[in-house]
Amino acid sequence: MAKQGYAVMGATGHVGSSLAEELLLRGHEVRAIARDESKLEALRAKGATAHRAAFDDAAALEQAFRGASAVFSFIPPGYDQDEYGAYQDRVGEAIAKAVGRSGVTHVLDLSSLGADLPEGTGPIKGLHRHEKRLEAVRGVSVLDLRPGYFMENLLFSIPAIRAHGIHPDGLRPDLPIAMVATRDIGAKAAELLGRLDFRERAVVEFQGPRRVTMKDATAAIGGAIGMPELPYVQVSYDDVRRALAGMGMKPGAIELMLEMARAMNDGKIEPREPESVDRKGKTTIEEFATQVFARAYRG
Image: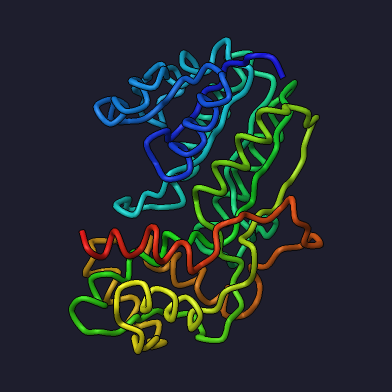
């Protein structure tokens, strides 16, 4: 495809930065959008145009979107928000308004497995609402990219591993999880935007090369950090609640995270489409453990 211009929300995050860099490597123009412009320096040095915008500011987003071939949109986590769902809706409404007013014709929205369900999935149900919101914008083709559980979520276990020598979580140790590395999600988004061949509404589910249990993940990260006997400990939901509160997460967000964990343990958040090679990333849990987790663990 010829050179295109793309507006990338959250360009300093795991997925957004991977996407922006891949689009730049392919010779496209990138409008890198983030709330903190100082964090955009690396992308600006690589040729991106930096746009500072609060994600609930429809006017600022409209300005960044206008004239772009397509927009990569997403609602960033808001764990510090008193009303998490209201926060998601506020940001989502600003995005939809900006899309509708900017004249953009294509949006690739970062959603999640489980976003087909309207209830019972914690913060993912806010992404369900956002999918429906974008779908209602006239004249815009929307592709909902629904990845599985981010491998990067495992990084939250680093303090407990350092302090207690265990990997604790509320998920079942034997639960097969559709884990995926965020760099693979970014690469897939770049591929989909590079083709720009989706019309009206489309959904692409995306996961890693194989299902991974928390027991598998613990073995991989333990081996990568020199703790081959690192145990995985499934803790109670009350223990998870206390741990998240200790991290500064607001009560409303905590309860949504617990609802999501229950939904995963109950098998509700699962791919709905047949698995295929083109809907799987390349990064294995072992590669993530050595290339990403170990580096973060060692600081």
